[in-house]
Amino acid sequence: MMTTKLVWDIYSADVKRFILSKVDQEMIADDILQDTFIKVHTKLHTLKNNEKLKPWLYSVARYTILDYFKTSKRTIELNNFQEEMDTEITEHSEKDCLRGILINLPKKYRDPIFLFDIMGLKQKEIAERLQLPLPTLKSQIQRGRKQIAKGFMDCCGYTMNEQGYLVGEIQEKEDCKVCN
Image 1 (cartoon, helix red, strand yellow):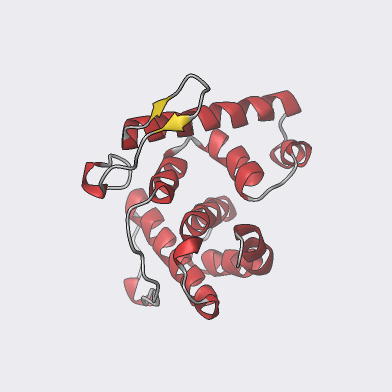
Image 2 (cartoon, rainbow, N blue to C red):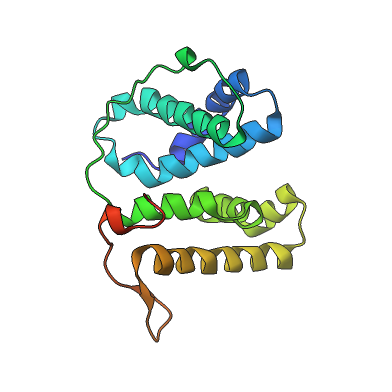
């Protein structure tokens, strides 16, 4: 079974080069790469055949680039983006909501959460990489996690129990405010 970390280790450099071939600014390419891997993290379980991982990964990157151009009001030649997605996405899940919540999280929380919870880096390493004091980084991770919990409560109707855990059941996609 492929993990997001393994996919990152194997493909992130190549995917970034691909993104840079479509986007001319490195910081924007880094953001798109991060958004791509958030999507990969939340949808990797839907991939039925590991032999289709690479085309699927590039397809996710293509759609993420297109999303960037749609939201930034830029134009791009759409014929450069052929659809190669052969995966079956079955039903609405918590991972769908998580993806939407992560993408909408402010960058100052999304970056530390992505590097710590998804990529598995140590907090000290992340603080150095993001040039933040360690206490600030820890605070951003905690605040980001609280916003993720709030996102599940707002989007999916979850509630927080006495022990501080989210409880509830995923709503239908049509009722979900983040996934729709």
